[in-house]
Image 1 (cartoon, one colour):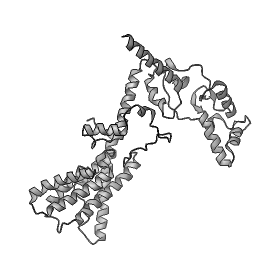
Image 2 (image 1 turned 60 degrees about the vertical axis):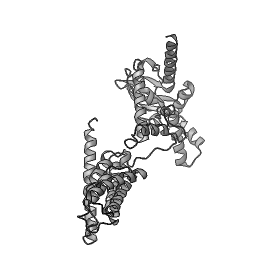
Image 3 (image 1 turned 30 degrees about the vertical axis):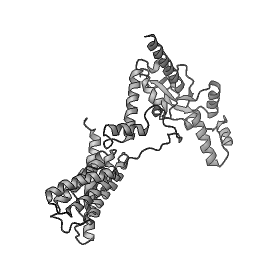
Image 4 (image 1 turned 45 degrees about the vertical axis):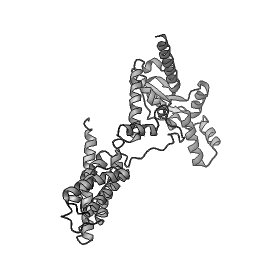
Length: 378
């Protein structure tokens, strides 16, 4: 496997260390509160659990259900096996095997669970009065504390944990999947592939889908790299300045039939994009603020009067840009469904062209038709 990024390695190591330290402090406080009770121990297999929940929080093996239930049911099996008085060697094998079986049945596969079962059997002679209460504390208590800390730490450091499957609804709040996933495999198909190769415990279906989508996007980028953005961009641009009044912007939308206009400063440098939707959202916000009708707010916003709203008030400054020499493959994912309607083409900070979704659609259609004709001729 490739070496993890240094920043991610440091994040995971720091999180695991802090998590176990805080768990130890909490357990020590509980032990003091209960008068030195031996129920509050920091069990050794928790180190392996810490590795999973902090270093690979996306793994199905690291999810809260897998961690808490996996460790707990493993301890439960081990305690039950010890009750049979079969001897240490036999109990160790039966305990670990039974733990794996129980975790599989409960869909709570968690590798440290097998270590919990083994440690329970091997340490039974050192723990006085080992009973089923051992499952609740320290095993379940320790694991739940660590998982809770992992949830907090991962979210504070930009990782999603627990990893939840996305809603079936697309990003437009409809039941449609995103365009790049509509012709691909469904979640059930992806899960079936993972099951076929016995990889379900290694990677979730959604992560697998994201990897495949990224691979397809990279393949598309390479396929179209012989065409550059400068080959397909519109060059005769209609731009507005930051001081252009929104009434004038609306007139340009109407006259030219554009959905997006570039915004430049007085020196001709690119500042952002303004779309028809930007006007609609500004009018809606004004209507809510003034408790007025949307139509009245829209008409008031578009009036070319002194002191009225300007392009800089509603434009989107943070927008994706491309260079003239970039292959158009980069535009496939950028313009497919990321909320971007057009990609400005910049050179030395100045806009020299723009590629819209319509431009990209025409190029893709022509390339597909041409490839089909060539294949038939061959």
